[in-house]
Length: 325
Length: 237
Image (tube, rainbow over all chains, first blue to last red):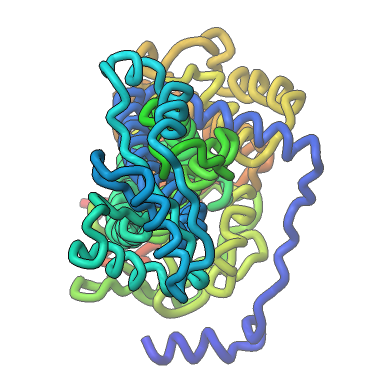
């Protein structure tokens, strides 16, 4: 064997690789080939329709979950990023029986605190009018105005909000105060939720992505196995590896893009329903926060993600198989 | 056309498939490779279409040193060849016409070329009357004719046939061999690996016999089995 190799490597006729003249491929031939390969791809999908539906479903489920996690994280971020202004506002609700004079006196007393910038009195009558305007159904259902007087306290520095809130909650110092709320805790909870969604959702999405690539990989492998006779013939009549790969990669791409489009439609519908539900809550936190993520963004991003899944799955599968043939 | 110099093929853990094979085939020749099962006939054919690489020696086909050919050049080299197999290798869900056209489509032939060359190839193998038949609707001989049409549709310089009559009855086998001879007469070099003694003996062309991976006989106008020496003249009483 060694002798043969030496003879092969150093024989005068074989000391260098001869250049191989390849045929020139014009646009007409490329177009004809492209049409043929696309038809082949369509034929394969029709022939393995059950497998195609299963793969498409797997890609869709993966992208629905991943897309929902991504969309949820973006929406939470958008809502949370609108909240910092609310850190500066502390709502102080009086006891229902607190006389107006004591509320006015308390306003002056709070305003005198060095950390306080401004205090606004919202009387129970003003609050009732707001409720009647914003929630007529609710206000109509109530026999009379149950709302107390309230003070909106604005600290000088946002950093003082927490300390000021704690001080106002001191019942011994402010016995006429029933309840103190500030948005900081809710915003903090929301931001923590956003972080959790990002981390856990990211891990789930990455796992699903890998699993779906594996499913597409196996689908294409099954297709390749079903087409092994054709592939052998193609190789023997002089088809290039690219020509053999193309319909299978196209098939993977189809599954990915179609799965992405299905997932996008489901998510767009879900997002619309979710937004309507959130608007119906009339929550001061969720209320009408505009989003940068439109239906077109969802459709494009999920279709591209699906295409990536399909391409990587089919390419890996083909690469492994053609190496063996 | 073909030049093999001291070619050996060794599969790890197995006996040597070919050993010290030196063979020269001129353009336009018709060569039958004979020998028992496991003699190395198929390995030799696989070397010629670069389905296999020799462990030792050099294999040159149509001016191309196959030991040095780059992997991405192999498809372009194979476009110079036609290959026929014992199992026909037809696509079951495509008609005879589509099967033959397939060989042209995968090498990027235009529609006009396909429309011109496929009927001509089917006509040449005597299958012009059944272009729309699926392989399952054809007899074994007819399927092999379609396979041959697919192998010659792009006008190859070399036709390789691995047991082309292996699945056929004797009469059909002779018909297929006559077709290969006809293709050879038109200028295509034909190499057929077979252990069909009837067709080899009837053909009376060059025969190379292999045994245990070595060439044991190379005869012009040879027979499947080595001709026994003529009986000596009986001694005069």
